[in-house]
Image: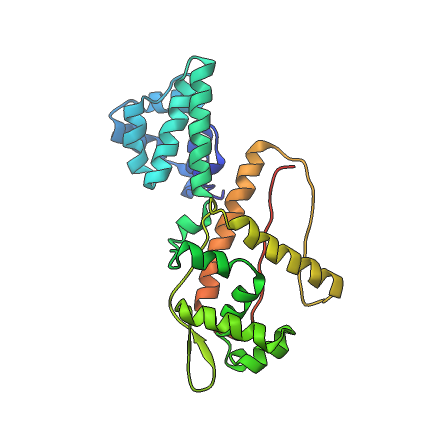
Length: 270
């Protein structure tokens, strides 16, 4: 059985069951190992798993190390235990809200990838004001499209507009001029989910996607679907999408510069 991310669970017992079943031989010996580690009887672990007993916060904290949870996962696991032990509706609501905050942190791709902002707020405002700056920045990584004339032809933009963007990108240190054109530098930029510019950035590229749909270009891949599903599966899908984005970023990191593609992903509540 596949081991699922802790953040897809809203009950710590379900996570523990999944953890056990994901191990070799259907988790034989795991319960005994936990009991020995926590200095309790194996029957107590069975009672916890079937819901007739509860882990104490101290036991949950110690077990989190045996489960090899990260710092954020440990906080989430402890909150799940506190949620299950809470005896009032208001306290349960408090823990549920705290769990939602941690899930939001988990799905913040920029934080997971440790991406840094290296431009000032004013420079970011210009950079994300249009898709053109972003496109030219990335296109400068391609040897055949890193000159002002070739960029103008490829994007169908006036040479004056291309020159304006190249000047801005060079001044900010995102690209540098060489003998045959321009090349990108190691300086990076990333918008956090709470940036006031994130709306403009997403809008720019969604509009470009609409333009591509109108062209009926078969090299593109577009998918839209409206579905109904459980809240549990919502978190499961968010986790899978986040993990997929991380995997894609790792592929891109090692991939040679040959073509430039736009990757947009939408998954939200209606």
